[in-house]
Image (cartoon, rainbow, N blue to C red):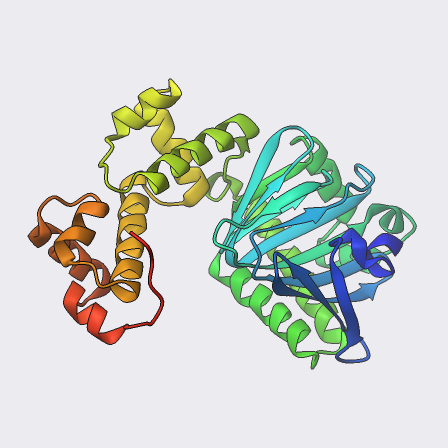
Length: 328
C-alpha cells in the first residue's frame, strides 16, 4: 500500500498540503482547475486503506497501478464521476452507485458538474494472501473469494446500493472527515459494508448496472455538446439519433445510463439554468430570453420556468439581481 499511503501523487498529481486531523486520519488538500479538493484517509489494517474524496473539480488525473493487485470499492456520496477502465469501458459513479473492481483505473477522472464526493476502500490482495483480514471469515466474508468472483466478471461489478449500505457508508465517511472516529470504529463500519455488499451480490440481478464503452460515452458527450450549444433549438430524439447514426432507443438508453435522466428532462434543465443566468445577470427582456432558450411563446416559457423554479421569470429576476452582465 506504499503508493497509496506514502505517495499522495498516486491519488492526484496536485497535492498541496498534508496534515493529520487525528492520530488516525490524514487530510490531503489538493488544487485542481483553481479549485480546492480534499482527501481524508486512514489505514485500518495492514494493506487496507479507506478514504473520502471531496472534490469541487471538473477533472483530475489518476496514475496507473499494478493490475489485479488491489480490490477497490468506490461509492458515490454526492455528485458524479466518470472513471475510465483499461478495457475501454467507463464506470459512471453517481450518488448511491457502488463500483467494485480490480482493474486499475487510470487517466482523467471526469466530474461533469465539478462536484464529486466518494468513499473508497482499497485492499492490497497480496496482504490478504499473507493472512490479512482472515478474521473476517468468521462473519462469512472472504475477500479472496470476492476477488475470484470479480475475475469472472472482467474484474468489475457496478450496481445500486440499498438503504442499509448508504447509511453505513455515510456513517463511515462522517467518522473519517470529522477525525473523531477511532480505528475500531473504522474497522467495524468497513466490515459492515463488506457484509452488506455480500448480500447485494447475492441478489445482484435487481441492482446491477451496465457499463458504457468509450465510444458510447463519447457519443453521449457529443449529443450533450449539441444540446448545450444550441439551446434555441428543440431537437427531437430522432433528430439527435440520426446525427450519430444510431436508433432513438439506443440513444435514450445510453443517455440515461450516463446521466440517469431522460434527454427531455436534461434538455429542459439546461434551458432553465441558462434562462436563470440571463435573468439574473442581464437586463434583456423576458421574450428575448425565451427565444434564446428555444421558446417562441413567452407565455409557454413563463409556465415552464415557474414549474422549474416555483416563481415567475420576473419574480426570479427581482429576487436574484446581480451587477455582473452577460454579453448577448
